[in-house]
Each structure stands twice: as C-alpha cells, then as structure tokens.
Image (cartoon, rainbow, N blue to C red):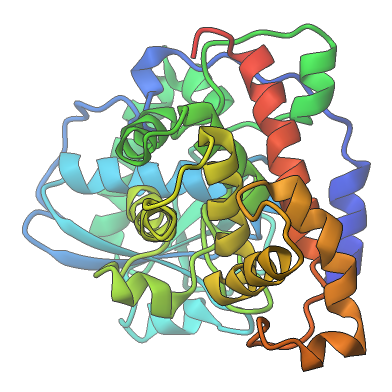
Length: 355
C-alpha cells in the first residue's frame, strides 16, 4: 500500500517515543562485527547494491538504511570485493535492474512484492532481505549473514540503529547515556574541526535528518546534514549516502560560512547561531539582515537583535532599503531552525553530560 507523504508524517508523529538506548563502543561509528569465513563468489568483483528501503525518518524499523549501509560495507570487506551502494529513487524498479544484471544486490522489505525468479536471502534484521540473481551469490550471502546474526553482539548492533525517542522528552525524564547516535565518532571528528562541542553538531544533524542517512527534501537536499548535490560537488564529495562523506560536506560548508565572520568579535555561541542561520537561509539573506540591523543602529553580532528586525523585512517597504540586496525575507523557518537546534543542544547536553 502506498502511503502519502502527509500520512507518513502523521505516522511518524504518532509513534510512541522510546528511550535513547546505549550503544556499546563496539559499534561506535557504525562498524558491525566481522570475521565471517567466506568462499570466493564475490572476491575481486565490483558490485552494485541498491537499498530499496523507506525513508528512515518515517520508518517504524528505526535507522534501517543506515544499518544496512554499514552491513554492506562490512560484507564487502569480509568478502574482498568492491560494492557501490545506492539508495533507490522513487518510482524506480530495481528488481528489473537486478534481473537485467545492472544491479547485483537489492535490499528490500521481505513483505514487499518480489517476483518469481528473484532469489531471497535470509534476513539480517528481522524485516529485510537481500535479493540476488545468482545461486552462488545467494549461498555465500546466506553463509555470511548467518555468521553475522549468530554473533552475540548482533542484538546490540541492531539496538544502536533502533528508533530513538524525542530528545527533549528524554532529557526531561532524566535519562542519561554515553551515545547519541550510531555516528558519534564521526560527529566528534568533524565537530573538532569546526571548534564546536560535538553535541551541537549532533543537534544540527538531528534537526536536519534525525540521524537518517536516507532522508531527502523536496528541494533535493540529501542525507544526515541535508546537503545539496551542488554543495557536495563544490567540496569534492560525490557520495552523500555515505555518512562520513555527508558530514564532511556539511561541516566543510559550515566552516566556510563560519569563516565569513572570523574578522569580527563574536561571542562563540552567537557565532554558531549566525553560521547556522547562513546554513539554513543562505549567507546573502543573513548579510541583508545584518546590514539592515546596522542601518538601524542595532548590534548585528547578536542573533536576538536580528530576530527583532526580521518582521520589518517582511514588509513591502524593505524593497526601498539600500542596505538590503535580496528583497523581502520572511525568516520564519530560519528563526524556528535556530530555536530548535538550541533546544536540542540543551537536551543532548543533559542526556550525554560527559561531552
């Protein structure tokens, strides 16, 4: 049954929030256990794997695309092959591509309609299967999946990618934990390059995607940090499904925006707010806001001052202001964006107090 986007949103909101769970250090960075004994059906091959799963932000199964992405990466390592992982686009029939030899593995829900002739592996997480078109591939995939799922740490690995509860409600309940997501180690690495508390960058990523590598916007922004393809290209990034590549692209852009303010004496938290506002609305829009504030003798280095003048930027009279280059600016989304991230940051600091 096809569910509308509106229905997905309602379903997502209707899910009962569950506790943020502790993920053991074994899975920090999303690496599952390995060491499976394998044959040579895949050795030296270059494979194409399609993740034909629903948007993680609305999935009742948690961060299933992220789980399977990391699983396939480890599969490639253990089986000594190269795998190009792609997310299935809307209205694309990748099972046809599998039958035509344009794809080698398609991972999908086991209860989806799968035609006769498509070979299905055993499941690795209770609800998805690997579809293949080759008996030797199937035999080895099943052997490897059996090894992985029989490992004593497998349930904990699944838990690391389970549906997480609302951070604000978890913080209010007094919950504490050592981890915020399966990507904490990557987040810490790139937050350090920005000079930020890693929990602030985690709040940005949660705001953008709720830690879903498969989330997309109607504008075409993709992945954990909702990076536009043209932005990724500018920073030399080609695979926005890859968690680290996506975070690298997003933080590279944040660093460039932050550097725009480097010659001024900003309070550290104010600097972060202006950087995030530029990330959300574009640097030109925020430059207009600051110029307009300065023309009214207001402090353009304080975000609250900018918020106070944004209502005036919605008026037709703003078109006559010489200090404003890009015209009217509604600003509702950007104000809410900053407020939400600051609230999430506070919640993450309470949930993960050790930093």
